[in-house]
Image 1 (tube, rainbow, N blue to C red):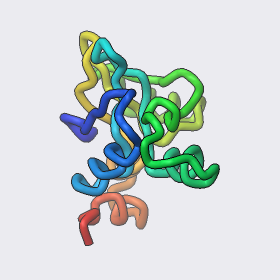
Image 2: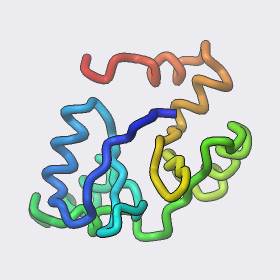
Image 3: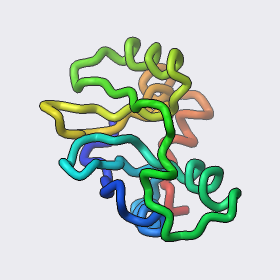
Length: 132
């Protein structure tokens, strides 16, 4: 799990979310509503498909680029196997980890691969420095 995930308010422009992703070498940010609660996750792919590809501008609010269906989350004590099954069932690559209503981390597909098969090619790619 990546702890202390990068979060942005839902009304921020996607350009700011993209800048945060670039600065941190990550492919997604946690999106929070006005109350600071989890609204969703915005990925670099979301911005490409829901903003750039349809010729919307960089000032498009992050909430409009997020996945439209409800966000799926787990708790910090959720077993790895259960997290993997949830990801499969909901066809998601990232799961926010929530404790007492606050996002404390994000589990990615790469994290699960590194846990289950640390010597695989995907684990090597997931462990590589994102800034190279």
